[in-house]
Length: 145
Image 1 (cartoon, helix red, strand yellow):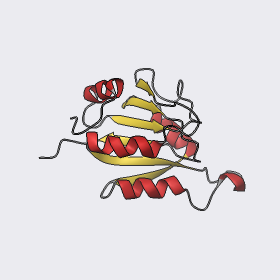
Image 2: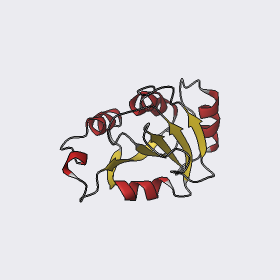
Image 3: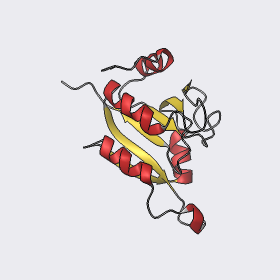
């Protein structure tokens, strides 16, 4: 299902083993990378330094490499403190723009953690993204005809 210019060998390998319906978690720098996905999920470490690489950087390449049929973003819990509930989450707008025609679900923080820990998450990509609520859960689609 690999479609394009991705050249990172461990990420290519992990994606090649993930099939239709498998999920790929692009996790920000604050995400619990070692415990926030099933033990069976392959971890690809791209968290070079705070801010490097970002989820948007990885998504920019990944969307050329795999078909994406659905996505989910993390949003604050309804009872989160006001300082943890921004009116606008800038990264979410970019993700929607980068994924035209793809349904993007909003999952409250703990619901997102549960989805990211499910057995269908095949790959966790650890980034150094420092943006608030920058995590993105992608569902792999099928190769276009």
